[in-house]
Length: 122
Image 1 (cartoon, rainbow, N blue to C red):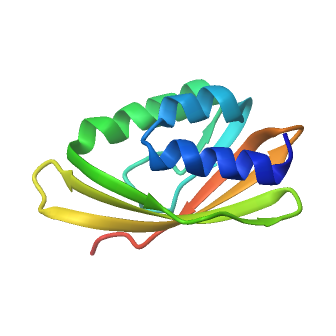
Image 2: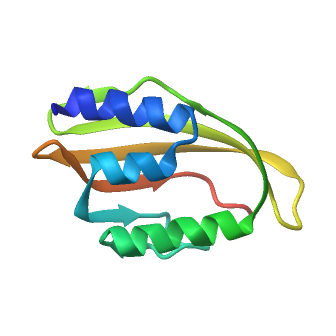
């Protein structure tokens, strides 16, 4: 798959909440995931097992998932980005919309890295 095809497919799967399918279909087994410093998640995860564990941690914090909006991707060479706005209720907190910019790198038709940029509470 080309970078544009990967980008379009990821956006399609994320818009329908098919996170596990996205990981299985589009990610390299040794992909890297990078979060914002100070987030409640590990700043850097390497490999799909670690990325899956981070996903389970996120799921454990979510009381209710109300929906997601994902922009069309912007593609440049081996990279693409999109914005995601998640309408969620985190346990013990009021309902909120979390906005982030997501940047991905693709090699050999698979996502090899993802990095997220967002504002931290406080």
